[in-house]
Length: 259
Image (cartoon, rainbow, N blue to C red; front, side):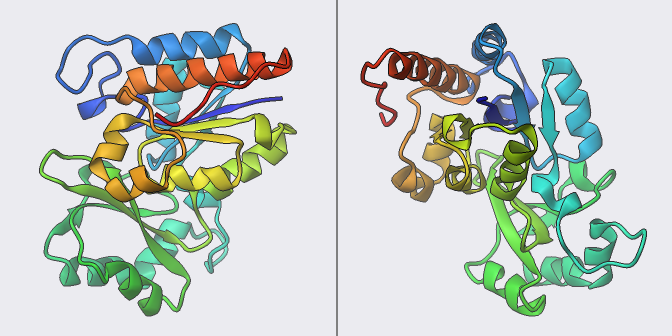
């Protein structure tokens, strides 16, 4: 069994969360066509996102997703908490979210992350080079600060404060096992370092062009960067992945991934 694990913001959705607009605001049906290809091949679509569960469920219903992995798996992560307490509240109780904001003047709480969170605190803006180390040391290694990609033309990024054990890769690995899927046959598509990390647990990972442009280090490490951005990049990745699987089944050479 093969599964497609696809990031939402900055990948399947264009700037501003638009499904049918590209980076220039022009109409684009690339994301919809990618979903149609997966449906035609009976490949389950699982949305992997930093979004909270409620927001992601609404998006999943709209797109007809077969599964949802919210908050990069943070809500279900192994983290010290009292009975009945959420991971989000346990992190808040440490005081580290406020300490981080006091320390990083370029950072603010993300408005979309002020309600409905269960496992991670979400910020937007910029942080210093030592912010990741600060969180690790201040939490005795229990928490991490994850850069989930650029969200603004001015260079602002989304950051998640979450349990050190939580990641998109860990959430995907658990989902693959629960479905009894063949990890090597699965695809992941995203736009950030957190998405690239899924290469540890699935056979192919594609980074859409806008993600590579936003973070040159991701572009340098990715084995597969699409020529197109956002939904059109997802379509490019899905089409090549499905064609490669078909070619491999017929004994032919699989399609190359890297541009």
